[in-house]
Image (cartoon, rainbow, N blue to C red; front, side):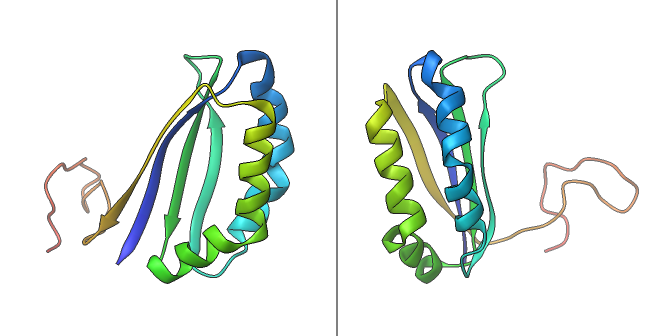
Length: 114
């Protein structure tokens, strides 16, 4: 079952760009790990101190390995070094995955392929 990690990290506004730049190598390393389908951070366009986090993992075993790996450990240390104001990050199990748009290009809120 796929797992989504999503949320935000709030850091001092004057440290956000540094954190995004310094974490790039760790993000790229995480993307190369087995089971990582997507991994990225992005500056929130409305709040200068917020970084949005989004990850997609194939399963719990892959995520467990990620948490034990050097990319994750280095990222945690980097964040600790600059100081986190707050963080709100959750994990979600995904039991069904399908496109937002149907065959006619219409966005659908319902799950139409099951």
